[in-house]
Image 1 (cartoon, helix red, strand yellow):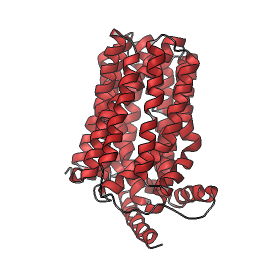
Image 2: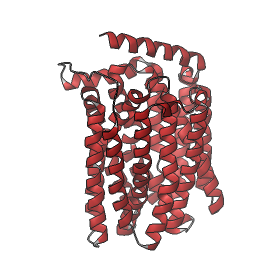
Image 3: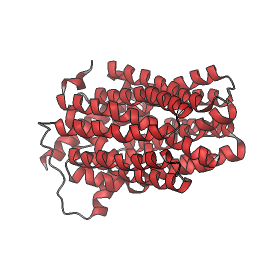
Length: 419
């Protein structure tokens, strides 16, 4: 039931990610809170988060080409090492009282620049460690770690910010990347996946990933669905600080526990998939998870009771990870090996890259209409789009077409290996 843990390299990878991701989540709380302390503006908080993810939106396909051209472990060693720098700079600036808003903005942009290379390589590296058979299990375990950290990291960060301030959160994140680097260095006997060495121009290689997504309708529609939810339903780091500060009046510690509740729900959802991988492969369940996700966000938007808000975010977290993990697994299963880096770069753009636009629109709406209406509007739009996809392209959430698509993806993978 936990087949991915049979693989030594994956166990190392997961251990490094456990430590690193806790640090990342601590910084995910500290960064918008520092921006809020410096500006007291929801729009400017959204701009910091936009700067963190804009490079992925604009350059992720370049990162995908790098992931397909060079060995992914080498790429990840570089990116995980570079991640330590902006976090340490933020620690030094905030600890000495010299942090300014523009400095936070530049640091966020630096983090995003490293991310555009890290995400495609990391997403497409998983199958090299565990193989296709254990891929869904590995994705679920990755999500479990990510969301367990989303419980622990924000809770620790909230307490630290409330007692000693934000600097230690940045220092902890900087040091946590050393665990990920160490895990990568200890790996051995990775499969001899031959990096792409074709002499095609960069633009043609980038276009190949987009062309595949267009030709495979399930992949294309899943990418659109993920992008829409990321744009309108994953604005928690912009809106939840405002809910904590302006609506629920629970402060930094309450903000940490709100994020922790959502992370706990996502952890339960990820563990459900880890122990029952067949659930993640069911397109009909994926549809229902998307609709329930929307409903939970609507409940949160109208709640003025802290306990009810925590419950709504728990449900939203459960549904979010169930929907996104299913999309990740189905897209990777359908994609041939020689295109996986570029297609997962499209996935990174859909999941992470559109975040800047989502954060800006959420921050702007919150400034104009207030945080509750901003969240409700985003949830309604996301729900409407997934219903339209179900009506226009019913095969996206059809078990029969998913089985056929998986078979087609397997055949294309075999063909690509013979080239």
